[in-house]
Length: 339
Image 1 (cartoon, rainbow, N blue to C red):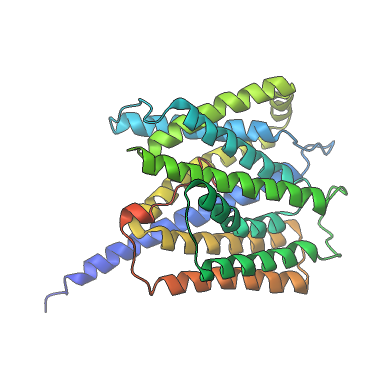
Image 2 (tube, rainbow, N blue to C red):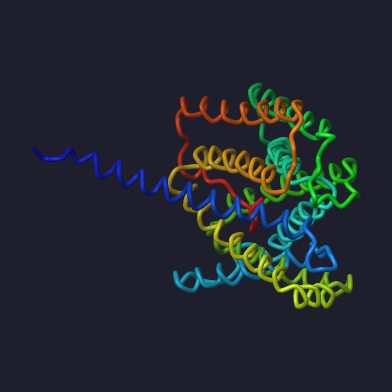
């Protein structure tokens, strides 16, 4: 009896789905662990800490810009800028501030706290969307934002007093750490919204935007390192600690690779599937960080995590019952670096 023609299609879709999930989960989970290791774990016998966040931004962006340029050349796409260069620069500045706040926050709050707080990024996105794009949101959107904010607040305010992680520096500051996370969320929301406006205002390929924004980010971060006097100090640090050099190289590699999997997932399965995968990735990252770096969770934090992830998954499942928007509306923009 002939095999149903739909079976190969289902198997092909399953293979693509597995490829997307494994790619995103593996690259971004490794990215998250490396972030915490570089910023919170001392290197060498003298227990020196790496503290040059802007150098990490520079390494990430120069790797991504090189790969995106290669993709543009391989696809024989013109390298000419589509939008005015200053608009790429606006995205670059905002993105540098986003990533710098993200790395700096790890000096003051644990990775699980930072990761869960990222789930609240829909709030600044809604605010910037209303200001820049004149978007209007409905009741369920505000309810979700409230629940996620509530869950994040519980997770941040009720940290376990028995955190005996050997990687605590003794200078944890929830106030300063949360301030940096608020800065991260605000700049990240602006970056995504402004990118969305660029995509809708110009006939722009994703790799074109990634290339020019990352090139601008390279120049800006390099200039910042020179003005701060940290460039030679960062190079000296990684030259003395080869394991730190390896960690930074691997961080830049998985950050760049994740962009391929993110773009592939959104184009193949849509933004809804991507959002569900990212939610799962954040949950896995928190659990791995707690196990790897010894961060115990209080019962209040467990409740907060259940509220946040329960709300996000409920939103995803409810949206599956709605009609899928056309591909042009489903395409999400991502800053040139994972978050």
